[in-house]
Image 1 (cartoon, rainbow, N blue to C red):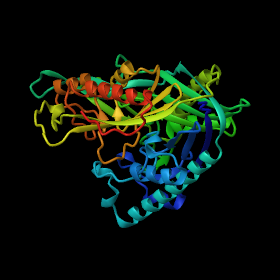
Image 2: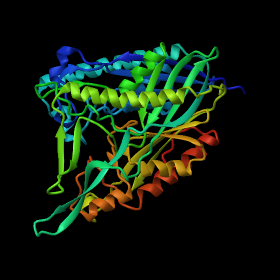
Image 3: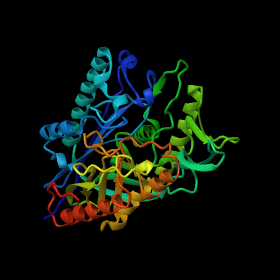
Image 4: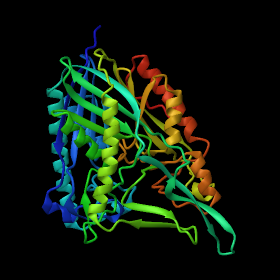
Length: 458
């Protein structure tokens, strides 16, 4: 049976109103006093006459209320919840939304009543804009064809750096912390998928690249507050939409749990005298914006070069999905050489595979490290397998940063490390194998035509 591709796309503004800004919360305790650039929710809807699928992207740090909102999208559009990839670009300079009991500093329920009210109002606005964009995307679907291509973009660097310092006894020791590790694993690959109608007019773009959207993190408008920004991802999307008028360009983060931009507002480096990590931030908003324009501009130029060589010739597609949970042992004190394990719990990573033709999009509900993303790709039977971090990452079973074994060992060799952890409690020598095993299971299912959610766990 012919399975002609249909595609539609839409975007809606989700920038908070000016009067709500004083009550919005940001990562790292940030407060906001200015809108530097706009935030959007973007939707790309696909169908092939039999199955439907949808990409829903937010210019936020995490996509709010994934379980509730995917059910709502299913009710409103008819797209099955398990066929919806629901993710954020992970910009660090946007208001926090969603239920976050696993992030105590960001838990809305513990904030003053006026803050809670403002955030709830903003969340309702985001939800209504999400629904409007999704319905418009579905209603605008028309016969389409897609193409894709890879290229390189050199704006990212591994951020797990070793610092050699003197201990109290005068002996040197090494500790793993945030910084810039030019020799560390990093994927410079950029992937672009283009969808156009049968007359060759572009409908949508999907861009994937491994980097944290932290160029504007901790920017200062002059009074200690920050300007809201979609950072690299949000700005590249807007550049694309301006260049290709009438299109929607979704940017997504690859396996970037250990990857930063090569330039950003915050700089962390070894002190020349002590070897200690030193963190400093630019003091002027215009300096932060200059770096953003440089990073986003370079990345945009790289993406454009890829687009110029894309030929859209895939008009008939298979659409399928599968969801698995990788379950591995827990060690609450793993980074400090601890061996305490809770036999009644597990370290869970949600893996969501969505197939669109010859492209396999693998959503991960945490911040997967580079080498773990490579492990998944190594066992994938589909050549074009793309990792998407921050997919449904506000589910209550949240893995946080998903560290690889090499980083765990480096932290254990020092005094615990100074890298973000945010709930990581996995056990070495278990995570990679589990991710690979579940990847195989998921592909077996979608390639055999069974697209049901599985409860299989390891």
